[in-house]
Length: 179
Length: 188
Image 1 (cartoon, rainbow over the protein chains, first blue to last red):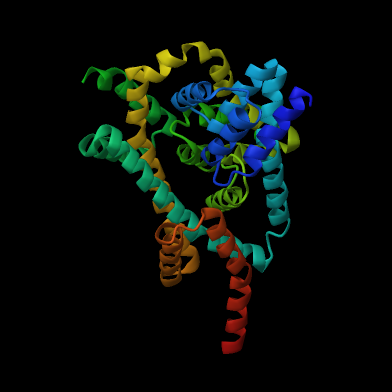
Image 2: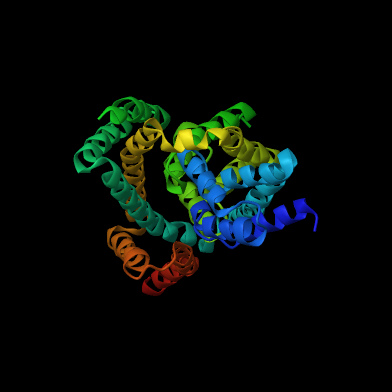
């Protein structure tokens, strides 16, 4: 099979079968990349994942770009990215268009209303997971102080989230390694 | 339309570059750009996009970027938003690969990623609070709180996949208002 077709199929399958966002697709991508097509060895995959986790942005597209480029150059990176992003993005646009068109119907209004409590609880659980990760790597006291300061900055002073993230990078990059 | 391609690109570059710490960390950034800063969508619609995005497979952030771009500028907008969101980090991934060990073992990078976690936690906490307030406002105090407790039990206590929980609530939501208006007619 032509290599770009395998790239397309591999990344299409790994992402279309992965529920719960990019991180949920990592084991499926591992299956395609290492076991099935043997584009990378196990060690190469771990290295790539380590690099991916130290860069910002979605993990699934970083993996697709790297493996696609490694296997088939810039064209390969494009194919792998397209297979990762396009199918689910297209499906979301279609579904939301359908909802938009029926904005005024009681069915759609009820769905919009009922989805709020689930999203609220999901956010709460994500907050909790993030706090756990944070306590694990920074300890309780530092985590609480940084979180409290961030909360005030966001809520009272309306600081842009990106500015807050940059300040925390400076603190994390300059202060933390020296202790 | 007042939204320019430039503001779409800038917003998506920011969400891509500052989204550290995996999937969820990017949600508050998307919300800031799309709801607070540019007002492309209201909070209710943002929650809806997030919910539907969660019921579909594949990466969440790129789906949201694609939809926000599509809503403002059609298919080209969708393409531009996704590209702006993912390209900087994809390029970094390809170009930096030779420095992989230096980067992933560096205490500076580790420090940066650790220090950003509590900040992201605060942002997610803020979102959780605001969406809870919305749920209570829209559904009433009793039903709002009751449904949050039910979702908590489904998601955390019996660990049902979020996509399935969202589908369950969407299904009930499809009948909720009709049922309510019918019971009002009957009591009237």
